[in-house]
Image (cartoon, rainbow, N blue to C red; front, side, top):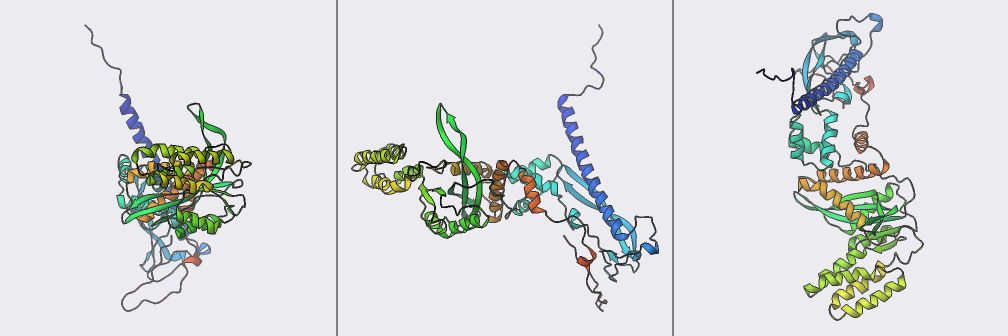
Length: 457
């Protein structure tokens, strides 16, 4: 009986996919290294005045931006090529070895090379790797997870290096410019753990009206959506001074918070309310009705009353107009004033602050809760939870600002990583000019000190 043979060159699909991905990463790394290598060689040729193996004509002699570390000469005719040295650079898809041409002066001194920020001195991790790390961390991957992800590509990066990459963005701009006018804002705070204790994350949100209400289970559940994050900050506690700093930041950024029609929704934190009174005294202030109901639980004497009393308190503020809300408050007080006097009095005391949205029936944007801020806070929790706690406040600040930038760029329809790169690296990639490197020549001392050319970033 004849045997059945497999087709020649048969490869299992998973092996084919793995090999294809490996070759693609290798090709990507090789191409990036080729482009960086070409730029390095072009800069060396520009500073030396000629390519390796060429002679410099007397009419073409000029001054280089680089200088000899021994005699201080900047004349190109004094510089000669003296081989090259190897330098390993790590890209997002792998590492590559570059050949860095070496220049030496006629006097025997070394000519330190400066390639600008395209290949900064002692730089090991290239810029695409930094953006890769930021993208993974902000999307919710822990630093150890990022480390394992890169290791599968053959890229070894330490946890301290990853933390430093994140920390560089502690002051990144969050791109809070508004395309249209501002009608309402929502203020809220959340707490995160840092190594030496908790930190309060304070943020100011724009509130936008939905084109169509959000419908779930056949009923409308949301009429508003989260707008841009206008300002944010970190503080040891949710104090009035901390909130004043955040609101000052929002005003200084150009946000139109000076409108007399500005509608402000917030919870009942005393520091927050005090800061709003000082920074936005002209605004219409709405207390979050959900927080009014939830805080009654803390004043309930009998545990079996908590759920019902909270539900009834929120029901008071769900009226169609101010008159109906007052009637509901009367019914609420008649039911709970004797059973839970302290909790009922709390609702009655906060009633006027919770019905401001009913006093403005003509407004299109008049939120009665800060639910959109809570939803944004949940997005942050989903991304911050893998880290559990941050080793430094700087890294926490960087994470929260990057989350705000990502949120704002999604609303603008732009790439947040590109915006981050624009903020991190706005400088030109060219090497420094002669004027930037210029300094007076000083003779050698008896101890053998030499003129050293400063490295420029």
